Length: 258
Image 1: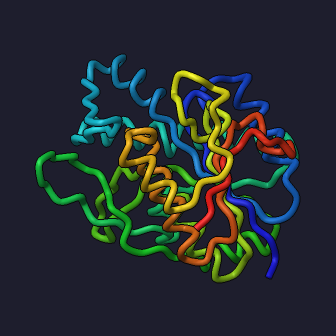
Image 2: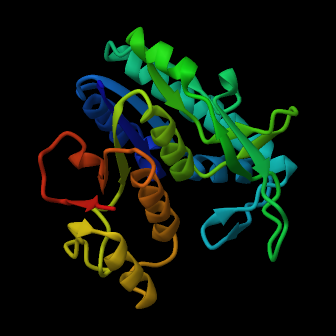
């Protein structure tokens, strides 16, 4: 099978002009088939503030009521997605932007209300990569925004790390998929205050140990849960690293092993 690199990037990297420009240049230089999944939460928060819409977060997760759903739809599938597509086109990369509702790529169900009502937030139930595969075969690079749909006309805000993992699993039926999670740090850190404390290799046993003793906590847990789910379902490799290391053979990365 052909190789495919699926890169998930979020945070300020896709929302600041200089870091986005560097990211797209590095992403464009990746050989072979590639897919980019992006976030855009900071821009959504900033625009919501301009519109006098309150941002509510619980443990780093956005509460998405109807006004906030309108904002994230505009920002993720519009502003951020199309800036990325335009940037890639300027580099000669024939990109096309989607969210999960386009071509019925990703269906979700609205997260059930338990202790917290997250509002219009989706949990992925079905992934259809057939059309993405046809585009990739034609040399087109998909750029995916973190929105899905329920098949009944409802859009749902959906975690971008989860979208990356689920797409990687779906595409692994047709490609040897390498999943790369990019963010502002050089990898998973054993001490969040020490950028040099990179955990270079992380397997499930070590992950459980680090979760129990609190070394790994908060937002890194869902990212790693998604990483291990991908590895357990056909994805060839998962790496967590700084976006600046995307094309470098650097030791500054965390390799996740099942």
